[in-house]
Length: 307
Image (tube, rainbow, N blue to C red):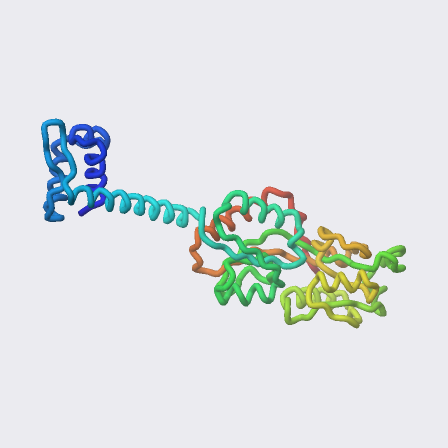
């Protein structure tokens, strides 16, 4: 029994005529008759009774008609579902984004456009720092991540560079720094700094510290925050000052003023899209393609060469 034979049989049952059925399914009448006969032989049952005006179903034929309609509908459903999965129109996708970059226009646009283009995909977005993202990507519990990486070569991962970020100075809005911004980092040696734990984002932390070492700058850290939002909240509360990714400016917070300094803008902080090698998810492939289009379509700041 073949699906083709079942579709021919349904056409005969619904039209009540071999000739009418042959016109519906675009098959010559002798070939259609032969397929119906093969179907009856395979099932070892008479399905049709011929009469002068056409054919009518036997008891076995009526039973098969009900089953055939259900089988053909189910086949269509399966084919449609598989086609949607293979093209990434349905499925699931999990994306990690660093807390700082959730409000960056390009990232927000990527999330919005992906949801609009693939509304049937179960799309989950997790605010995660770079360290946890890397762990989850390698464990296979996260499909893709927007994060800081120090090198394009990442074991077990594929990457695409999205844009360059740099650093900025965050101070309480009512501080003297806000009125008289520093011109050099050396002026901040005795300031109280709020910093993040290295363990939660080692790539970001080490890259910043290497930049400071080149400038012979050693911030005096008096407070630690779990992530950028916590750090900026403490800055707003007047507990100290901080140096954060310039992308933080995209999410202004009351009580904070962001300042730029040449010694901070010279520190490149490249933002990457990363995903696990071998992940052949069509939903992921669509995200990667959309991210490449989204970021390359917007002008990016030129890379700075560090001395």
